[in-house]
Length: 121
Image (cartoon, rainbow, N blue to C red; front, side, top):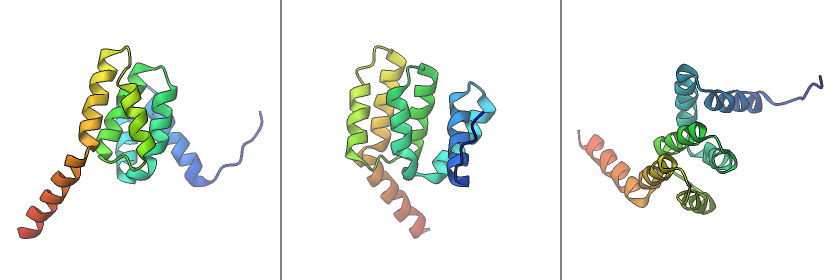
């Protein structure tokens, strides 16, 4: 077996992504929380996995995480989401629509309005 050298950050990132791939509710929840905490920096990686896998459960988990992050910084990743909205799978199409809604421009307005409310308290 060949030993591959990775940075600690790469190893943790691979561990988190492998946890999302598994159908294990506890691992999925912990990995989702970690990715959401990291934020928009991981979205491109999530979208890349999203469009290359055929595993519907994995796609749905990735879409939920992207929606929870609430931001897709790269316009090309937005295009990938729109392309995925033509999936043959109805559950994937619905999750894509929910994700696009969650990361849309209105979500920034919602976040800004919440910040103003918190500041006023």
